[in-house]
Image (tube, rainbow, N blue to C red):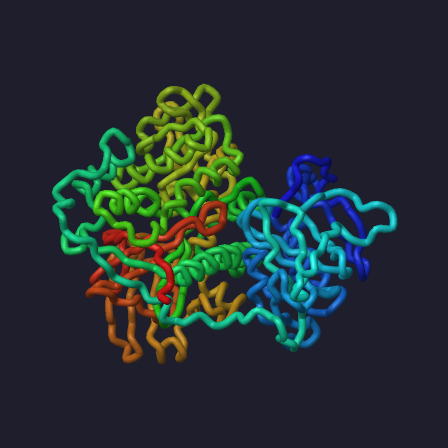
Length: 628
């Protein structure tokens, strides 16, 4: 939410004023937050009588807290403030009953009223998130609101509101509230009422708009020409990996692309943002419960380090990837790849270059913003003076690393790629250094955290003293290992160690427990029950990669499909079967990407087999207008 840079802002947590019901309004100036008072991520969570209000001191937190105190109800968790405009009910906190909400567009003939919520759309001052304020007074000339995360200044003596917004009454009686920010816009207001007169009609989406559309470009001989530039390191590495200029390995698919309607794209964006918040909430929940954490089969010796990683608010994700099934049957998430997710370059660059070369002007690319969003994520990362990109020697990891390198450098962060670990050496002070002698202090990696954990399981006894790493290796004769970099306390790693939790499929039963019957989730359990048997289910190892060791079992206990791999000794979870849509003989999965926790782009994975793996093809994805 927006903050004005031209004014003095009070220190984070300063009480700016007191609204109706004794509700305190606080400064949300995060740069001034006191780490002594707020030592970890948990300390930023706001609760009233055990009820989660939101994160200190954001606009949504105040809106929920004000309603809780003054009205006795709250609205559901939402990813972005502008999502409140689409909510249809609030929940009474004393009996969990539902009360209807109605939304009124700015300019509606029904005026806002005290206690309703004023909603700003995303953009400008309220970029990405939108904004919400509580209306406290309504006149013909103005409305007064209470809000957090805008001006962060103390109210004058006797004032009981944050800001006053001017009003214009239209000739038709429409009530228009002026935004005050030229680059932002007010969507309207949300009122708890049964009366729908003049309210917006928020209809259920036509499910047919979620069906992907298969199309082809005409063959004019384009496939015989090169269309990637070997002068660019990432494209040269991509050509080497793919053995040519192509997006899909299957020659039958080289002219094919898939289309996504605007409505479906908006739903994917909404789901991505909401699910990221849900996965983060579930991660925090697991880290408060050792019994749950034990289900993740992580070495107990690193538990404290996972907690430290989560508690450090600078230790945020740069990017991750959701895997979805999308069709007229609905939108369901399979999992969240928060650690070492792939397909960024295909999404953010190659599918655009394919469209340019093959003459595909249908709609717009589903990944054209990804690189820009990654650049912004790196600018927000507070990465240090020099960052090392650590990768294996795999060809796919090479182009992935080079693509990310371009985003890191565009963010103004000097960096270098380290392939493998053979070039690493011990510095005179005992720290790990690259071949040029630079300390490795900041890392982005293509390696999975599980690779480092395998070294712990195989080479290091699982006790805290040994994990100090100074007793486990003779530096005079042995070179640094991967674990000596990634688990070194002074090294800041992206994606951080805590991503082991949301990336582990043990998080899926936790999500189902926290959000039962949520429309984006599939029922998932640690144990196989009769309900799952009746619908068919998918067996997944809680830790796995590339679609390995997955089995699909139908309602008659027949194995529909399964994959081999090296994760067959891991604990498993059971997820309700929800098949991918089949288009032109291939099962199609939609993947969306996050950057700094918000939607950043999408791509398609396709395979004749029922299970998407690392070898599955990628087809271009375009966003097209809804049919009339």
